[in-house]
Length: 377
Image 1 (cartoon, rainbow, N blue to C red):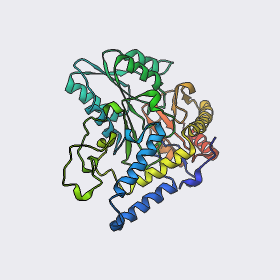
Image 2 (cartoon, rainbow, N blue to C red):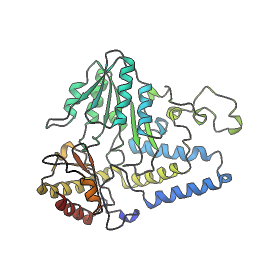
Image 3 (tube, one colour):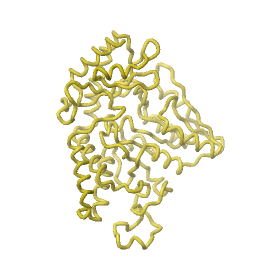
Image 4 (cartoon, rainbow, N blue to C red):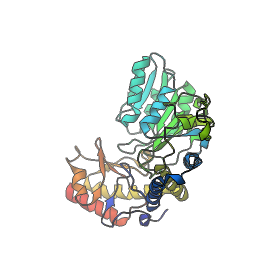
């Protein structure tokens, strides 16, 4: 169990922030890295051509380590939607084939598939909520030889309900379907191994559980897709782009691996050092230990919320870092705003109140949450 790390963050003692699924706070060291980057840009004569490559490679390597991949498998993206669009551009869909998603899935992992199905004559199949055995059995049942793409999260963004991605990955390989994952609500807090799951693409925005800056994320691209077509054609993705004087010698070849899929201006001198600082800290803590610590915390909150009439799903069917609390009826109108007035921060998505803590939370935060909830319900 990891002790409380509140001292690493700028969070006043009277703030109970249980909203990491919305946006994580930044650690002091991450803020300092961003400030140093801004000051570097203020004096651009100190930025040399190698700087365009060294920090991106460090970030690529750290993210790869987080998911048990290789640096060559990782591209940098500005948003989840960019990574999903990259996957959609590089996966085949035949007329009448199915694209599988979940009900109430995050929009960035839905819209591209709707567009692709419309263009290719495919069909989006939405797996409905319901049942006491979680999502996985219904996903496995829905995936068949007519399935072209299965697009999923690791845990659902509204309530943290968990999917057995290793089982889904095996089923996809059995029928020849591609597996595309949005890991934004899990990576950095829930262990994930690309070697075990074997997705075709795995996308993650970095400003939630990776505790990094906004507008920077990563996409894992399996080796069999690394010769595909990028969304854009920027100079740095081409072979020999390290030679600034030779950039007018246009090259048809790309940088190796997944680097051809990097977004333009990926060598961001402010956000990339921030991402590096955050990833280094996550790896130092250890994702398995983060998950264990947050699981204990959400279990305690669920137990204390039960007498208030708030129900949590079976712990075996949800991610430990992510607690979705359901109400006997509809979610009370304006509940997050009312809690915010008392310095307690949660969010509501669908019919679930998300309580998503991190290592900065403590017993006083939990007490404040339950006390304020008791008065608001």
